[in-house]
Amino acid sequence: MLQISAIRNQKEAFIKALAKRNLDATEMIEAALALDEKRRATQTELDAIKAESNSLSREIGGLFKSNQQQKANVLKEKTSQLKEASKTLDQVLNDTIEDLSTLLYKIPNVPNALVPVGTSETDNEEVYREGEIPILGAHAVPHWELAKKYDIIDFELGNKITGAGFPVYKGKGARLQRALISYFLDKNTAAGYTEYQLPLLVNEASGFGTGQLPDKEGQMYFVGEDNLYLIPTAEVPATNIYRDSLLNESDLPIKLTGYTPCFRREAGSYGAHVRGLNRLHQFDKVEILRIEHPDKSYDALNEMVEHVKGILQELKLPYRILRLCGGDLGFTSALTYDFEVYSTAQERWLEISSVSNFETFQANRLKLRYKNSEGKNELAHTLNGSSLALPRVLAGILENYQTENGIDIPEVLIPYTGFKSI
Image 1 (cartoon, helix red, strand yellow):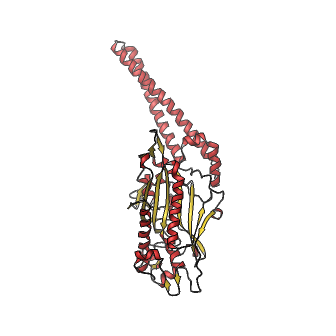
Image 2 (cartoon, rainbow, N blue to C red):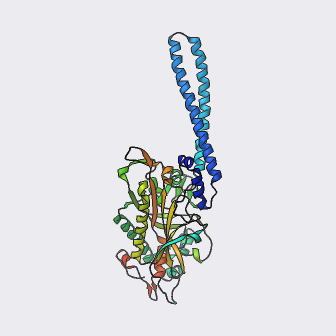
Image 3 (tube, rainbow, N blue to C red):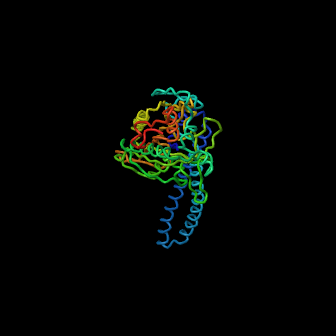
């Protein structure tokens, strides 16, 4: 959530920056400033009434002590009127604060200056590419055919049990999935991230804290009876560990990692680009998350990018990194880098990680602050990234490592799988 004080001081700059998202935020910004002005004016009036009421109460006490009951009773009538006015203003103030918060929740984060202008994913800027795309023979097929041929993932069985987008991993497919999770966690903890096991359900406050609510409410599975949401990513419960927290500057940086299943309602369209593991309702992901000093968060973002690069280099998968344009940037993000693995059998790039800096946007919603060296409370910066999302990494391994005789296992994963091929 944007800070209203920052909007007040940089109104035109915020409107211009949000235009990178192809959004004319003028009306929302003006409405927010009008509500803020009403809030401040109401607070000032309320404070004045309370001060007058307190002063009269003291005066009434003095009048009773000096036996001037008549004057005291006149002032008591006035204090009664002031209390009624105070109640009315209290309600107006609370309503105004709620209206302002509701509006601010709907305004996306301001893009960083590095975010390129663009309207869709076709305008994202490629900033890095590494790895040779293997040349596969005529035997090469997409991963959903490999999964069926070697009986390692059953999409039809998942559809029978639950529905489309809920695959069943079997035998060496399940072991390869588990191997990837363990490998990712080991890489993350070796890099200084503390591992957490996190809840898969979160309350509404947690959804609002990280920005999934109200922006992505329709994409989350909702358990109505308990008013809980299935998590779309480990980012939500992990970041909310520090909701309503005041940290010491010496506590920073904080680095967390965790594996969770993730759940997303988004249905998608039909066709090869959403077949198999390309788009699921339930999938596994290992996440990394950081809470940083504002002066160091972009260095931290670069470190996270290098960390994910190291994992893909060890897996020996061809990949590229994109800097997302304004039109493709997530609601909460100030700057995002997407990693994509090349699927040789499908002849297209598959997104497998997003690494983002949210600056103070989430921290303001979370009330996540730290006490600086001068003893003042400031908002921290939050960052997160996939390290990594498993379905498309697995798809990339199956397709890029396929041979006429089966599927080879990346060398770095063999100690985790216990086998060299499928």
